Image 1 (cartoon, rainbow, N blue to C red):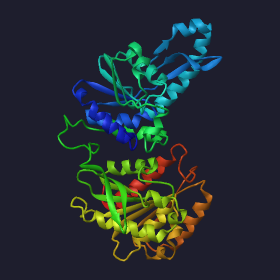
Image 2: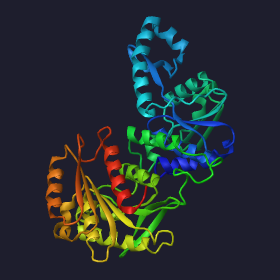
Image 3: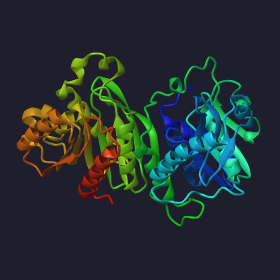
Image 4: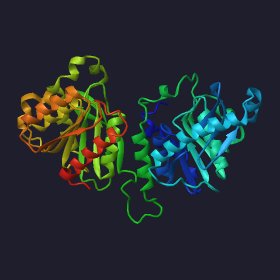
Length: 439
């Protein structure tokens, strides 16, 4: 079994854990990669979601060797055998703990943004990671959870090596794993998309979960309840068929089509992060691949903006044949070369596009078509992406529609710096909500 990404793994894991639905469950994700998996499980179980922040206490002269672990609220677990064999003194342990506790508190505060830790006393606690390799962090997490008063500890992961349960001894009451393949080399080999999870993604998952209304008690559907459609689709675009992922919230007020840039796909964690924010405010999203796998090997295709734009037009036409989507206004979100394709497609005489957003894009690649765009257009560029920033300024000068250029300070081309992707996503969300009628 191969998972599309961590969200896909979380949904599959949630199906296996449905028997816990009414067991006063708390779901804890190990940051960072375990949190997107845990989010899907918590949503399916109508359970609260939190992070389990732990820090290993490494032997001073051999830091990779753990002599214990610490958790929040002063929890400390010490491995007496390692202490005895290494001869580490109590003073040395205290020094290591003091250093690690500063980092633990910093991370917990950043991830929770001021929310209190969820109490675990007397609860069934499901600890989730995106997979098990050595298991040392997961084991420390389970020990901390037990020390914090959990009645029952369940460790659940999408993938782990054969015999993985033997590593946890009495720390766990129950194990759940979807796949234990052999040979097993690395967790990432079982994911199509195993891009590093950012702090912003962790924070977003926790915020969405904190504001979710449990379906068992809600009088109406919450914004964060499962969408009416959330599925892989295949769309005909000229002579080829392209893969995509459609998410349709209930009572959606618009749909945003994502045109990915060079070297990207519908599995892009950055674009999926933006899409999640749009879904929260009632916008449907379609992330699809502009090129087939075979076409991506020819770099000339990446810069064939006319071809990419016509495929975007075909995909938009397909959207308008879908019963649930036909009445919705359409927006385009383009990244890198995909922004050029989005603007080119928006300039088509009968395009009827409600808004366009370019993030770190190349709108200049739309060339002479820029003056023909009538859709309100937002250009988002990183402040440290000097070359692309200048290209966006030149392109903006050629636009005749409502437009705006937003520069995100400290961001480079991929918006990988802390907080920059979140800033860009929020600006994009606000632009779409003001022009597509969401809120």
